[in-house]
Image (cartoon, rainbow, N blue to C red; front, top):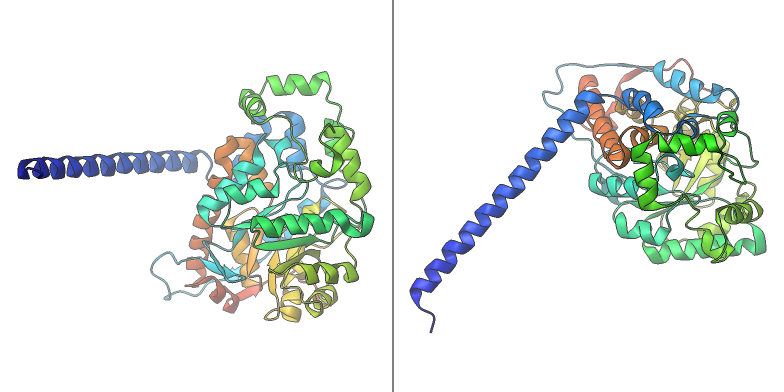
Length: 425
């Protein structure tokens, strides 16, 4: 029989332990709030992250994250197109910052912003894929793992099980044997959305990368090694995570293949853009939501819908393919009119802020995806960068939605908009 005094002592000890744990949790949360406030003071917009990244990472890493095709004209056009869009506010509607959570393909996300698929983000900061996935999971925003990123889809599913999407390029050899096997692996890992990229029919050159030494085969020179040694945070992360690699494709190239051998294998296996017939075959095999990324014409969006595609990401590949393409935001309204309501309409290319996301939503997008902004965050802050970018964008979204009188994101579509660059087909 347990003595009553022991019961009382045990209860008191349990209460003390609970109080101690609560206090420790409060201290941790206060510490996080202080750190978050300090980051917002130092880096109040992604432009500040970009500026700091230039001197925080090796020069080749910055050129890789920041450059595009040709003379960067496509990047500038994307940014200028967003900056030209004006939203006319309506007052007397909101008194508090509005909620910005949304639903995409039956899942709830905290905001209409996602992390776009990127090739080789670990060149910008070693271990980037893991940091991006962890930030997206913590913030509850979509994370699109790129096929030519550095992390296997199975590992990504462990880090970001609730928000993981997966992007594929066209691996056409042997009747898409590798592509269909990657589809199988994605399905087994629990990927929620499969994204087929359509806007890379040919390979192009990005001059800033070439001059900086990002070539294939990759042959780092003394200048690049010296730049790494001058960036201690980058060097530490490189020591921890190792050299960037093609995680998802390495198993097909052979266990003994080095980075350059895998890169050569990828060049042989991956070429051209998906044909409509091929998209139909992926649609037959993939049982979850399917998205096609990289469209700029309403007729192509219509064709996707006719094949049973669930969503469209309007994109000019962030200005990294051909700089003479129209800004994705300028073709968004026409595509939204064509297929909105029958498919989920999303956009990337040029998203730098929460205000840009609000502009996209007001013009008909269900969500927007950013790439460079997250690379700037990695370059400036390492592993802390992606979550800070999400925090910034959500704060900016809430302020912008509230300013124009939208209590929910979808209400932004009723505001008056001046969009001088809008294309009419």
